[in-house]
Image 1 (spheres, rainbow, N blue to C red):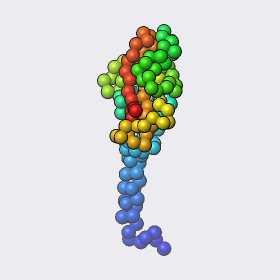
Image 2: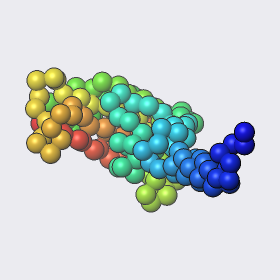
Image 3: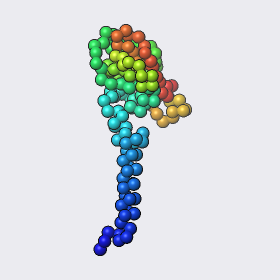
Image 4: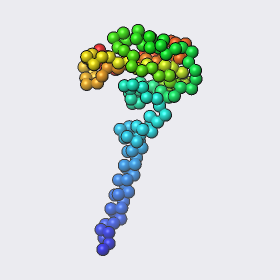
Length: 152
């Protein structure tokens, strides 16, 4: 018995079209797990912040390639001053890339800040924990940027 008789060419074309569409989705759609993995490959993780969270803020954190002059404790103190109600969860030495403006990478301390579980998130981000990230230049100890999501 022939495989679906006269319709085998049509079925083959449909299967190939579906396979091509699926492969293109996996490669290019931002919701695809393969696309997310490939885009985040080589980036540094910091507590509470996903690659997509940081990417939406034009931030890419990669492994550090240098020796810091400013101490990590100073970055933690700067973050505590910036967000006095929060607490420092993690401090990581990174190479900071501004993905929107294409500036040269900067050696920086990335400080993850969180709030106690009792803190209420803003109505716009209901259901997500409030969090912030503070980026401090590891050479000068000066604040580069800070971003907060759902802060109380």
